[in-house]
Image (cartoon, rainbow, N blue to C red; front, side, top):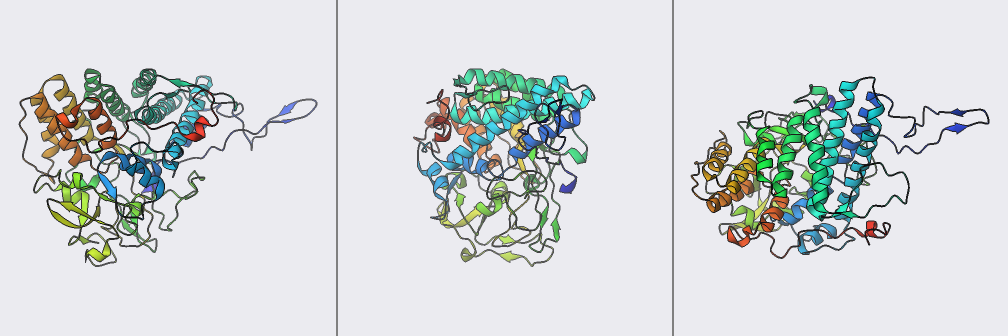
Length: 507
């Protein structure tokens, strides 16, 4: 159960000052400072837990992070006028205004993660009571800092780089070239892969592993265009995970009924999962809407199933995504619900229900000429709960093994071995619950087209395609290989106004 997962510990901003008398300074143990804390490996672990806490917060993966990626990827379309203005702006505008609140949340959240990770990395060399735990925590901090910097460099390009904690309101940095940022990310992940364990006990599920570091390193090198290095990193993961038989097990989890009673346990942290962010359905409908609460006592839920569900209906699958699925590909029904489908088949208190158009509060979408109402099934809870308002607790999978296989396929396509690209693609296609016909590839362009197609249908609505589109557009694969799903969209965001207004070095 999720009560046994990683405990997210909130470290309050360490700004308290030690009390002072004429004779001596006295440390207030109830109000530690950055100088008095981080003396033991356990205190370092508390520090890295606070980085996970930001990752899991409402301004990041619990809400704004998936919004940012989904609005720009081409897989989503607005569900109607109910899509809130900052989210609609990301979808409708080729370049959002620098005041966009969703974009600003991600910028701020990434730098909060980086600053907290930097604090851990600064203090770690002075900790010697448990060197094994200390070194593991260093690896976790490096992984999380690398993840945050990759979000920044992939979405903004050149950004300020901080490798030490900010201690003064005037500790500003100017923008560093993207190449230097990639160098830092690669160094962090390379070291993290050496320091992190391959797995944890159940009480520490949700922490970064060596597999997560290598998988993210492969993704970073792929985005950078170093296919040989990407392949080497990904091969360190190959064979150490496996595809689960049931595709849908990658997107379910612990679910509670509206009355708080247990409903489903799901398949989180399964053999395919490499790294996932922990969320909890407490059954109380709580969500940190103010984005100002962290720690295990705060709401630990994600708003995703509510935002993208059938009641709020903020988005629908785009026609571009719907038409990408081959006839009879089971992943379509695993990914999308539509009129006529049956929900509540996993409920322990409600009878199954056939969806009518009136049940789905969205605009229509069109697949192969059929126009009806649809919404995303991935990361949704209507298999178990049919509620107008139910904040969920399904873990967000950030890295899974199918993605690794398809990244390997892309590497093979790029270096000119299409047959090996086909082999990796076919591993994904022959999962028992998918069982699609194998592909045969004889040229680079055919292999690239197959990779692009397979990533769309396998990884749809997983906040991956946005980064893929940026990579493929830069390579000139739109329209040479396939059409650009978001033609005219800028590759990089503007730096938020909140940063340019305070940091004179980025104006």
